[in-house]
Length: 103
Image 1 (cartoon, helix red, strand yellow):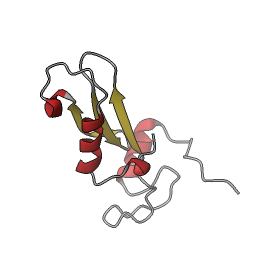
Image 2: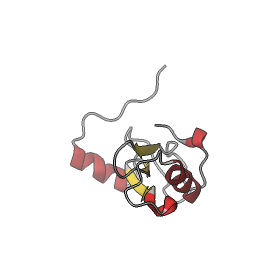
Image 3: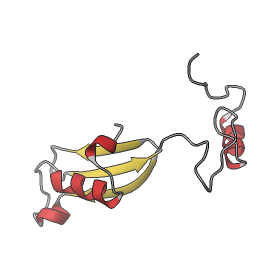
Image 4: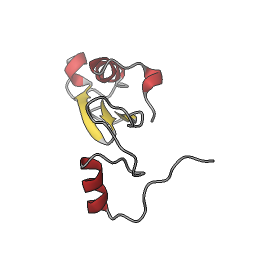
């Protein structure tokens, strides 16, 4: 049939405790050391443009991994150019390609 749905009988605190104890959101066992039983991570690329200070950030499963402003690469204070250098940096820092990003 379809994919398993998260357990709806648990509140947010109980769900967090179940995940920490080794059960996935759907109640299946997860081996944290090997990654066995874990879903593919969700990568989100955030792009800030066009403002007075553009940049990019990369998050995995809701946790920000890298965030940087374009001015750090262009050396132009309050750079408002499209943050292509920032995007390249955050992807390279995690060893990702553009097609690896989910959102």
